[in-house]
Length: 395
Image 1: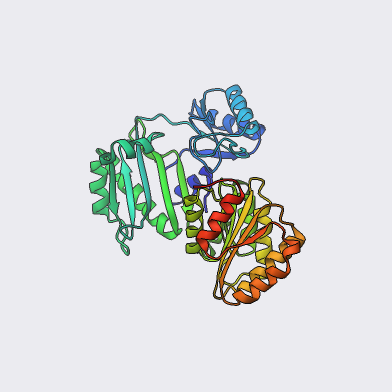
Image 2: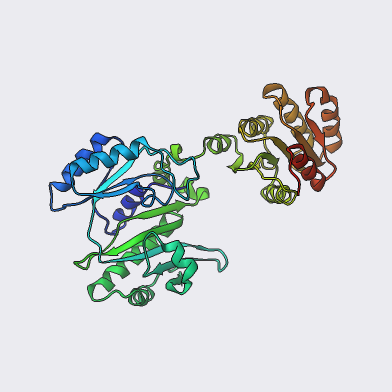
């Protein structure tokens, strides 16, 4: 699960990590009021930032540092009335419904700091660099030696000694070292306590006065651990998620929308990945990842078809079921039921093997008049060839 920057800042603040004062706003009027409060103090600059679950906001013009109420009003009006398009959103962009209006602090240095799970080494790892800011991806690609990595102890986490060594390698000096050590230790504890999969501060800054603080943050959390964190569940913003993925979740389906034109309905994540791979091998493009699981109900399977067929770009559907707990005749009945409720106007290729497969084939054979677009396949390779041919592509 992802959260917005303003929510991530609050988590950092609660954990004792310094962040500039800011307010979440949903209207131009709220943004103006927040800016008036900031500018009435010692601050002379305000930053207005779109709150969406995507990066590239600055380059897209959705982060503005301004020095007047009129400029805040203009920035807020623009962001709330235009979709943000960046290299992470695709050409359709994202609608902006929330803004962060915050104190714009002066910056002497920008750094990068994050904690994530290093699966190759089976450990949480702190990642840092003196080259923070919007070009961190380019730094990682062009000068990987500038990225420092520190594996964290699975029980003790980040020790003060290791944090101090890293702070010195990051060229902190004087009192900044103690600030950086405290910040890294607090971030490490927060990462573990909240079952995060990513905690990123970019940039971590040093002000001209020598204060170390976070001015942008991103958090991802392990969905499987959210039952332990009702306070995090309250931060979930469904408007930032794919509506079909949310709908599928209600029925216990694992669904991820993709950009292709061949819908996939498979049982088992590994088999689903293999199905998408062989579709690609045959020259096709999967439209989704959809794992109905090993014990999906007839209702859930029917809903899976409804979701797939509801995608405008889907020109064909491949069903690949290896029946174990998920019995093949249940899938066959769901296909027939979906045909009656939703209708199959696109080519449908079905490959079934396993438990009750003979009964399933009989069900499909008897329903051929209701499924004129259906073909059956003998194996996965045959199924992939037939569905890609049906949508007009080939390897």
